[in-house]
Image (cartoon, rainbow, N blue to C red; front, side, top):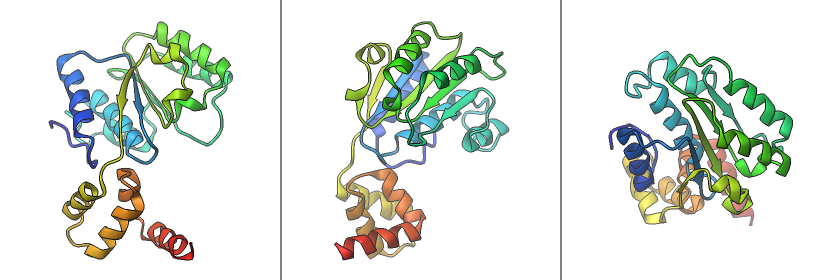
Length: 218
């Protein structure tokens, strides 16, 4: 693949996205669907970086750094805070996207699109039907069945799945050659094929210790 996605698995999905970008066949709206903790939100944010960066997704320019921190002026990051997305918030998004564009695109990232209320979804649908010029929507969902069919008909769905424990173990061994093999085996089993969860547990020993405590208590 051309870009450094820094993610485990999902090669076919990433190749599809890279092909869309290289061929100029970008959809104006993408919905990354699949189980939680498999890396959908990471892919969405990195896709925004690829589209906005003038230096081939260099990871070091101001644009890449700002997108990574969630403060890029033309990349709106609507993170999942556990609350429903109401129509007032959709109206604020519309106002933000209609502001003068300074980067190559206006990009809207929405985590857990299924959080939208019906009223908010209908308002959002109008924006999908008539988006501002050079606007890209990149959204994620853990449950595509909760999304309005009219919204699904206007987005390009990219499906993500869990990976096998054996595959996950192999990739973790490659990424963390200095880590204890037993720890990698444990993380592979606890993650149940969810690559995002596996990386989180490898990078956060406290979380791994908490998981192990719960496991042993059970």
